[in-house]
Length: 243
Image (cartoon, rainbow, N blue to C red; front, side):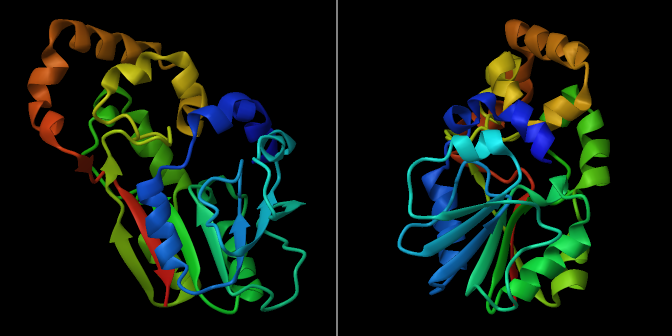
């Protein structure tokens, strides 16, 4: 993960600004925890204020883009955390578990060092319906290969609460589904450069050409006219909270 994000991370802090509506969901899920571990912390997105944060991140480039804060930053991965058992009140991991080399071990490490809740923002690989896969069908295979299922979280953590996280139409965090109502954004190479899925897909020029043609002809607007009136959309993102 570290080497990948040393490349992706060039403009990450600019293109992946935390969306305040999603941030509020994560903050609420952490409850009254005072000490919080943020695993796969990237450039510091979604780290809640008013808590003592410890961020773990393998990529030096991502760490360098963190804004000034009081958070302690540790270079490292999820699979071998350098903390004693029960060090933190809660732990969080935001759109990162699919990059871990051993997901089960990483979650076990989170559970080991955390006294209370473990919170994930992740993607359900069983979800279908996001139109971007019509142009890039390999996204489905990619997600099925790298994203843990919701049942996996229950296996690793015991009972979990799973809730949808609808994506606002003007989402400021440029992850894969952020532009569901702004389709022309996917034609921008700089926008795609902050999405790990596009790096993994390789040559996406055929899908980009079809999307560009559908936007030029108006076919996309006709096909997805119902989306243009929505303020938020369920694109498959889920908040997973340990019991």
